[in-house]
Length: 444
Image (cartoon, rainbow, N blue to C red; front, side, top):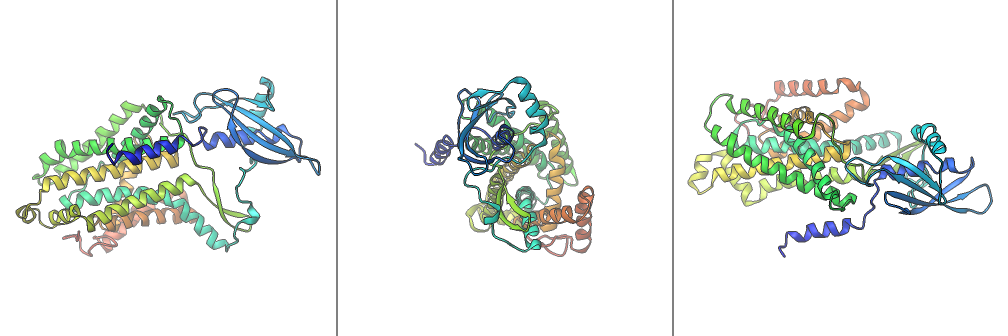
């Protein structure tokens, strides 16, 4: 067995031990517990288990009224379709202590209680509010905003690094990386749908397959873009490559529209039950496991690209070609191979960004890549588009700027502020925050 297959098999093996219902379904089932008990009943969740029939989730809990003895009870929630399917199954039935609820009672419960989204009993083992560390209100608010910006920082950092990888070699901007992110989002959904057809419908395996499929599809399309579009235009002057990549972006967007249709495709929510981290009075700082993990994966990937350029043999070849391709060729560096590998790495990073958008924010439409790619381009220019490290830092800066603006200023003006920031930086420091002060030549 090849060594690189071992991590994949390990992930799929561990994924088989994870739960088959997403966190929204579990929360919805817990929300149905209070109306099944008298007012004032204290509810304590003991755990979850498989229900008596397929697509049924059983929650075991204890109900205590006043000072009386706690009574052990159960609730079975029946969902339509697979628990972690491409379209999350809707709640279609409830049974309390093994007795099915009548259709009329279930309708009233769903219409007048569950749709109000009352707070459900917490999961067992979750920290109580009084046990959380107390911090200053300003620190708690800042910490919450920073945690909320983590996934966005990862997305912008990955896409900005993709721009820098190619611009550092060619001095040209590829205006289709946003669409590659949308392609990765769709590929991840299709990959999850395929794995569900094999009955491997666990959240962890779904995320692993989403990443694998998105990276493979985006890398393949990126390699094809380099061979059939960018390489014939390598010696072109003027704006031919810019126009060609704009046309490619439009073609990819239409390709995605035809493949997925105009409606949004999304992954079922998993691992999104908020973790309580700290409090400031009644304000509780929370973070979802999925947002934290995917944010760290994205930032770690961007850091890996920076270290690859700085420390590896390929990084030395990349820097040599970016400095002087002809001289590098005299020393045996294959510039075409360097360009091909850069495109594969850049488009794979776009695929990871697309999965992050889909998993954290619910999904990305076929036209969502334009705005995402434009903001990432702003981040790359702000940080220094010829430098991978500078572009990555520019992505973090854009995410921080957006979250600060969103928390203090009108939300509908946020995008205008981002583009205005770009104009100011181009006037005062054309090379970006971390690049040269002059527009050209740019340090790579």
